[in-house]
Image (tube, rainbow, N blue to C red; front, side, top):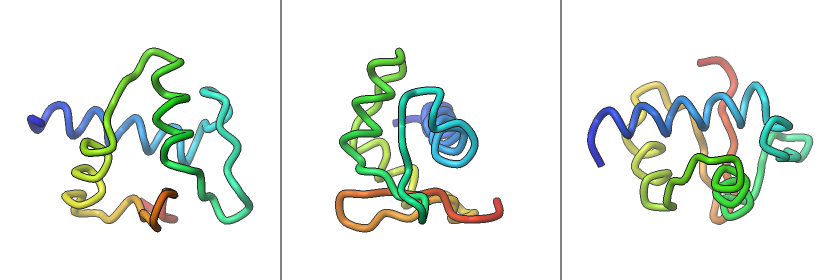
Length: 80
């Protein structure tokens, strides 16, 4: 995955995990968590496809630590 793709996926995740989850039909739990498979499916249904491997790369390489993965779920961290 190239740098441009990494940035694109990162921005998409930020937008929909932090600012507009309802735009793609996501419901976050009270702590901001959502199931990763649900996120990937919702994104695909709304025209943006990415893989679990791409998501994991974004989480691992983001220097601002914008996301946290806990097993099968993800959330945006506060303040980025």
